[in-house]
Image (tube, rainbow, N blue to C red; front, side, top):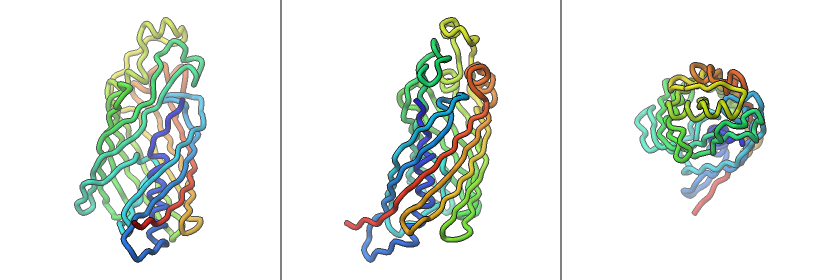
Length: 268
């Protein structure tokens, strides 16, 4: 089963829908801006896969009315800012780890099954140019499937030509611990023997992929927003050398997604 990175649906809604809500929804009493929506993606069925599959997930976001909405990228995971000093912000972040089984690709028979997992960590970001150029890093540890630590680094350039359109583009680097690489890209001698297609391979931690993300969102009405995005990653290092990607799958990983969300004001 393919589990999506939570960013791919939540943060795109935050950047476009919440912005629309701030501009268009006017209330006289203190309240909240609530955003609900859904997203669908088409991308690799598991890390390193050559076969793609569809998946989707609902989204939810809430923030105080009048709180300034920041632009965000579609691959940001779900976060909450606890520290804000000038152009710097940091706080907890939550994401999801991919699952993998022979149901995704029959050629995986004999290789370990990997369950999906929630991952938890911290994020930090800094705006070199407010609302335009951002540096961001996320550091997340898997809570249940033993896949260790992932560190995602990126930069994003946001363009808003008018009140309806928001575009973004930026490079990505992803690092993974030895536990992650062993779980998703390592092959034990026993697994190699049971599978019969791939050789044994020991994967070490380090740089996992280099890529980029682009997105566009459009405010259909004052409270409805549509978005489309694409993220491409090229596996490198042991992830690229692993028989999971090199023999059974692909070093090129591309995800395309669409989203639709609605924002509205809530007063208590």
